[in-house]
Amino acid sequence: MNTNMISKEENILFAAEKLFAEKGFEGTSTREIAKAANVNISMISYYFGSKEKLYEKLVEYRMNEGQFFSKDLLGRTDINEWQKIERVIDQFSHRIRTQKCFYRIMQREQLHTKNPQIVEFLKQIKMGFLSMYSQILQSGLKNGVFTKNPPIYLLHSTVSGTLFYAFNAKEMYKEFLNETEDEEAFDEKYYTELNKHIKYLLKDLLGYEENK
Image 1 (cartoon, rainbow, N blue to C red):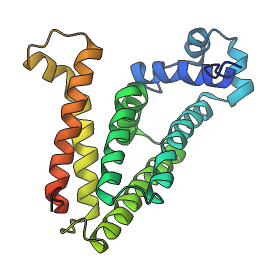
Image 2: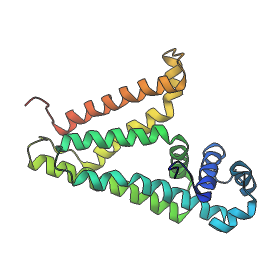
Image 3: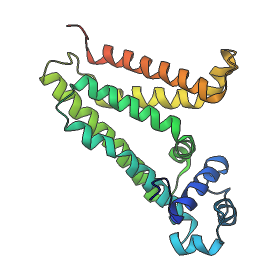
């Protein structure tokens, strides 16, 4: 069986995701989604009921996908707390880089959403990150891996804020640097430097020394 096969629902979700990222929720019609997914418009009603429900399902789908690493990561005993922080940054950054459409939608949602389901999803994902950072930090302090105890919300703001600002400003930075590489090559360099920069900041914030 081909593991790359996507279901009919996923096909509609991914087509809608691109349109929502480009035009916003209000600016996208179910007719456009059906056309982009190459399905009859009645299929959207059949699988999702309405454009609102389709939207909620998309957010839920991506959010659930993003939860996998935190639960697995916290329980690991083969790596120390600093290495766990590194994994969080690498995976968070990778998701933003590879799911540009979804994160564009999410940023717009933070400013404009009136949908209570989406507001709740956004809150849950942030609370999940805060809880994860908190557990890693407490454990790292207890084990002597970290020597400083910064406020968790500022730790989260530093990682998310830096990642999202850099994500939004990438094209401007590319122009500023007079880069002529294709997007994939520039992305590779850009996100490698970005990850390194965030880890450097966090080493200082957490009081982590590699060679002690």
